[in-house]
Amino acid sequence: METNKTDKRTSKTISSINAALLILFKQNSKGKITVSEVCKIAGINRGTFYLHYDDINDAISKLENNFYTNLIADIKATDKTIMNTEKHIKDFLDILKNYKSECFMLFCDHCDFTILNKLSESLKKQIFGLLKNQGKDINLLYFDYIFGYIFNGTLSIVKKWASGNMKESTDYMAHILLSLATYDLQSLNQITKKQSRN
Figure 1 (cartoon, rainbow, N blue to C red):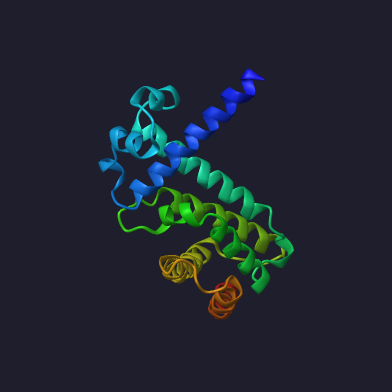
Figure 2: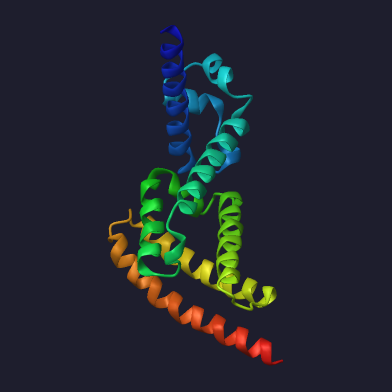
């Protein structure tokens, strides 16, 4: 029974620290966040903070890694047979909406691009694998260019959506993104065909 109480206390403390980090993240870059600020907002003392983390960088790193791990797990759990459909895009946007409070770590101007780069690479491998499994003969160099174009264009739209507190429905946003992605994927097919002829 005592162990359960300790676990709940630990979980509550870590949640409070993470919530404080997210508040501070919106105001400052990583390098400007201090343990004292985190403790003040979380309502804990420095000793409690150091029971769970080595330093502020350790706390931030664990928060980012946890967010990334959960985000990727949820993306991979979606139905892979509906790739590039409106439903698949909506599912992805629904996942992002579930992480609304953490999502700004992907988009804020003063944040670094660690999580975003990892997300990009993970999605690129997943999509390339799906296309290969469909028997597509895709040149990796051209795929890199087209994926970068599609990913960054999509990112720009999703960033605008997130900055507006995700007011538009995921159905509406999925329709917009699919319309643009369909054109881009047609470009990918054209490039693939052209490359195979050369």
